[in-house]
Amino acid sequence: MTVKAMGWAHSFPVSGGVRAGRQWTREHLESLPWTAEEPETVDAVVLAVSELLTNAHIHAHSDAQLVLTWDGDCLHISVHDEDPTLPRPRNPDDGAVSGRGVSIVQALADEWGMQCRRQGKTVTACFRPAGAQHGDGGDSTTENEQSAPPL
Image 1 (cartoon, rainbow, N blue to C red):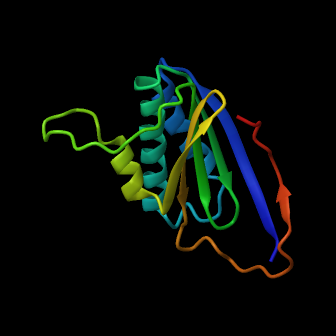
Image 2 (image 1 turned 180 degrees about the vertical axis):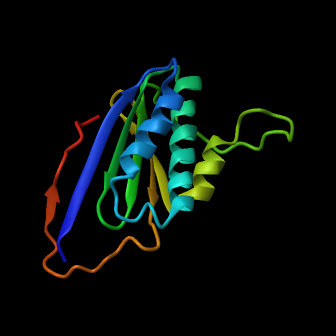
């Protein structure tokens, strides 16, 4: 099977970045073959992006670099910010307006993780759409259509 990897990267500033990040993500997802049949997965991805960008802006007081990568099996979301402090799930009070971002990403994503980097941290999430594999045969080589810059 031939796998084509597609990727997009964008930096979102602290002011106004979350809304722009949601729109940018939704626009790029439209180019993937499975999104029309799986609007719930698209909505989950957009919500996770929103939560991760919000965490970068609110808790890290940092711009956020968002990278989306589709490898034919998983849509990988990576958000990098300048604070090396890793997020942790919290148990906010019922009336609290924040504190649920990590738990939301954990609940929505098929996999998720975080990693300290030289200058900050990167939080990643993987979403595997049910209808993503189309089994087109061939070999298992990877072709990069667009590569994201290193974070």
